Length: 165
Ligand code: SF4
Ligand code: SF4
Image (cartoon, rainbow, N blue to C red; front, side):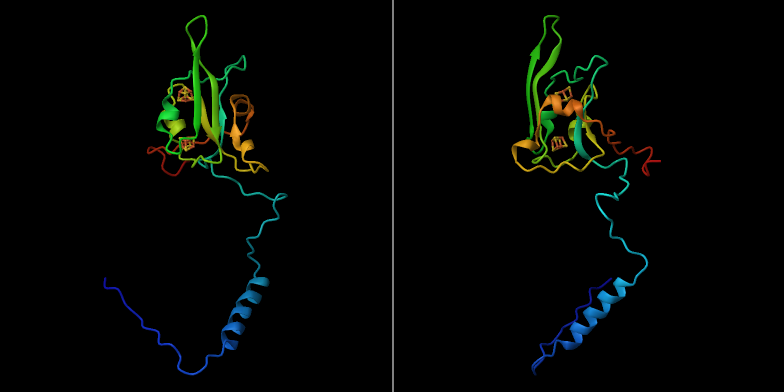
């Protein structure tokens, strides 16, 4: 299909903006009386979030409260925003764990790669967006804070279930 080009000439006489102003105002008033309003009274009213919404991270924990992360290093390697800090360690039994694990939620682009790549399903994105802070430093979530999160885990896209049903 060809692309149509419409040339709009500049008016030669002085243009009056009254017509455009009335047109704009009539549109505004039409929306004022429109019964299908979409404005929500946040925070009293909130959107129902999609189960695949990707928001604030959450670390899965064992029954005894330990983080499931085994410090494999995959998530900081794949993270395109370079916002995961990991210092792995080993306990007396030779089990690996994350001595330091931090995610900078401010730099994160919520791509979900960390969740996809984790071999033990430890790190997840959560169905959550209310993480505003007053300082830049507060956006860096350490392991303890990540383990405390209790929002539902994000459902990743499943090609077998494209509509997430
Ligand atoms: S969601 Fe993406 S950008 Fe955010 S921490 Fe995970 S891998 Fe990095
Ligand atoms: S969260 Fe998962 S992918 Fe990241 S270091 Fe820990 S075990 Fe590895």
